Image: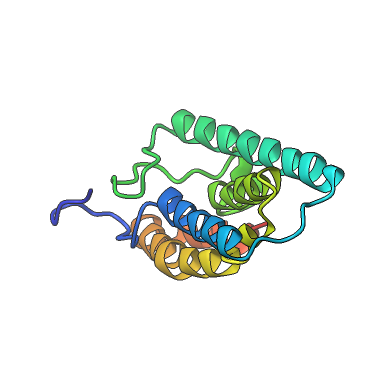
Length: 156
């Protein structure tokens, strides 16, 4: 995690842990409030598609960061502004991919209650991670980042 002398965004928690916490809360809801089983096409078709798309997008995101030579974890200092690959479509492709993976897991696990915490997870991500990262990137890259923000949507 960050040391006081490092220039990092200061996110509230590692993003995967925020998504995992929401998913675990959703699974607890599923145990406490069991519901009807999802239809197979919804469970396997949509769930599988969301999971596959999310994992594919995460892979594309990781490749883009490696090519740029900048670290992926938000507690490490950023060394380059990544604007190619999935960043041509979204300023937050990894977080969008995490939403897809989350939804895919919930559907494949036949746990629709697990989707209930997802809006709160997205709100926590927005305020506790994305806003902080955007302030950090604007401070670090200035007009270059402002130009990127002007032409690239936050999510999709």
